[in-house]
Image 1 (cartoon, rainbow, N blue to C red):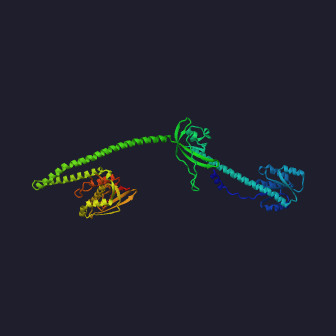
Image 2: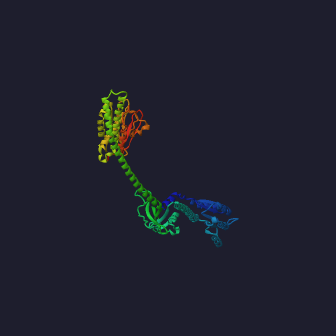
Image 3: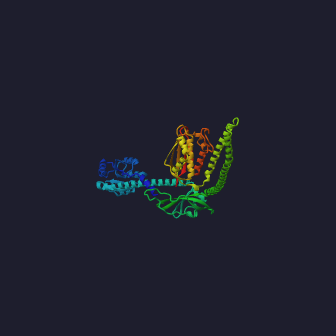
Length: 531
C-alpha cells in the first residue's frame, strides 16, 4: 500500500502558482484607469470592460476571481449585468463587488439579492479596494489548489482502482486456489479456483477462518525483509504440505506457498493452495514401480553374477583341461620332427612343422585366455595404494630384453599413486608397452606416458610413434582375439588390449584409443582418484 502511494506521489507534478484574473467593469474610462492603478500592485491579470455586454463576452471564455461592477451604466446597468452573470452556471459563484457613487438601501437590498458580496462607494479608497480584492484573489487561489488536490486524489483513486482490478484479474487467472487472509487466519479475499477446490461459494468463505479449510494452517511470523537494507520482500515458506477438508468432509493433500505483505491494516498473507492428490498417487505408483524395478534388477544382477562366475569357471577349467592334451600333441610332434627330419617322403617335414607351430600358438592362446579369466578372480582385498611410477618401472623391467631388441625408449611424467591391484596395474602398463613396440614403424619405438587430474579421476595417456590405428578399428582393437594385421608380420594372440580393458573396468575406469593412421596411437585410460 505504501509503495503504491509513493509511486503516485512521485508522478505528481508540482503546482505552479497561476495569476488570477479580475474583471473591472465601468463605462467611464477614468474610473477604469483608477481601478487599474489601485489593483496593479496585486500582480494579477486585470481585464477591463466599459459596458455590461462587453463584460458578458469576457465571461463567455474566461473565469475570474472577482468582478468589480459599476452600478450605473447606460443600456445595461450593473444589476442587470449581475443578474445575467448569476444566471450562467459557470459564473454563478464568482464574487461581485458593486461600485456606486451614493448609498441607497433599495440598491443595497437588490445588489445583495443578486449575490453581491460587497459594495464599494465612490470615491474609492485604493487601500480598502486592494485589501478586499486580495481576499477574493487568495480565495480563488485556494479554490484552485483544492481543485488540483481533488483532481490528483481522483487520479490516484483511478490508479488504485485499476491496480485493484488488475490484481483481482491476476488472482482469478491463477491456476491454483488463492486466499488472502489476515495473520489470525480470517479470509478477506478468494478467487474462483478456491470455490472449485473446496466446493464452497465465495460468500461462505469471506470472513471465515482459513483453518476451516486447512485445519493445520499456520504461519510463523518472521521478518519480511532480509537484513540487507533495501532488499525486496521474499516468501517465507514455499511448498509446505497440509491436509485440507472439502465441504462434504473429505480430506485431501495440498501444497501451500505463503506470500506475506505488510499493509496499513496489518499483515496480509496470500496462500496459494494446490491439490496434490494426483501427484501423491503418482509418487506412490513410482515408488512401487521403483521398488519392483530394484527387486528385478537385484534379481537379474544376481543371475548375471552367477552366470559370469560360471562362465569364468568354465573358461578357466576349459583352458586348463585343454592344456594337457595340447601339450601331449606338441611334445610328440616335436619328437617326430627331431627323429624323422629328412627321412620321410614328400611334404612330411612341412606338415610336422605346421603341427608344431599351431600347437605352440594354441598353447599361447590358452595361456592368454586363462589370464583373461583370472582378471576378475582377484577380489578387492588385493587393492592397495599403488605408485604408478613403480608399477611402470616393474613393467619395463619385465620387458627389458624386448626393449633392447627393438631399441625402445619409454619416458613418463608425473604419474600419481592410486588405489588398485598392483599386479594388474603392472600387467596393464606391460600390455600397452608391448602393443606399442609390436606395432612399431620403421623408427625405434618411442613411448611417452603422462597423467593429469580431471573431474575427480586420473586420465592416463600412452602415446607412441608406431603405425597407428584407423578410426574404424578404434573399438575393435579391444575385442578378444582381435588382430588387425597379418600374424606373420605382427605376432600376437589379440588378447593384450582385451585384458587391458578388463583390468581398467575392474578398477572402475574407462579405456579407449585416439587413432591417428601412420602417426602413432594414443591409448587413454582413467583410474579413480586415490582418497
